[in-house]
Image 1 (cartoon, helix red, strand yellow):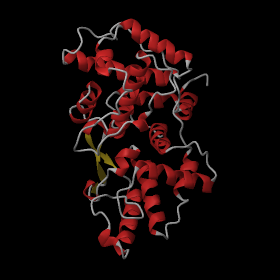
Image 2: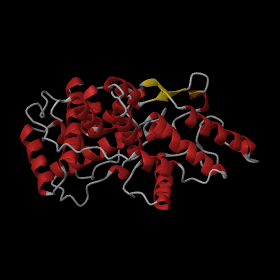
Image 3: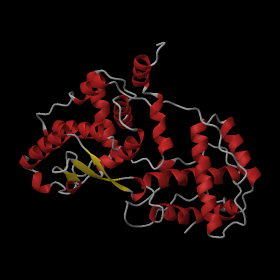
Image 4: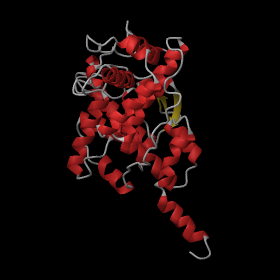
Length: 326
């Protein structure tokens, strides 16, 4: 097992990172190794070049570096100046500040791990500052646009009913798309009108769901049970594909793209935009910031605070109604 493999297993099985996140960390580390080994950049692997087993078992194995690069010795011998040269390289290649910050976060996490295991005498990133990020406001849909999107699927078909239930659930609860596809039937509490969410880092939470979204889930499940192939479908997940297997995050994105095209909304909208829309609309209608933090499953309030920058309508109304000179 390589040093990178060992780190990936630490992320997966001790820190409970998702397989996708572990792949991205591996790709960043391989790029760093290639850079230190004199790579030109054209051979740098991407996340798709990294292999991994499904959650719950096996080893999170990274693709090996090029044969002439001794990754373990290269990584253990890194100095602060090597990291600075890498950052300069990324700047020359016009990587965005957010991508550079992510790669730097990968290296920070990796060398904290190495220091903890006594693989290195000191952390070479201790004196490195993260580049200042541009504050990018989250994109969100207007309430009328959300209604237009939700009403687009043809609910007379099984897959259309599934898609309506799926979109309603995302907007009603603000769940991440990964949390949506991980939902099991036992996670839907119709009595208390809430969902049991399996969040990032194995964190679990209960989140309310609207009666409307629950009604669409029930409509979809009724149609699914009536389908002649129902017995062959996976019985655990809420949302399944046309073959009866658990739906993937990529499939959710494809379905959303289809409905955006049909109803004429911005094709750049992603499943995460519905999460942004949920948070923005909640705050616009007077929800408490900490309550929205809990609903979104954010560990830090600062992550949720970005939505306060887009709730300008509510703030302007409050100003107009309260200020004597308004």
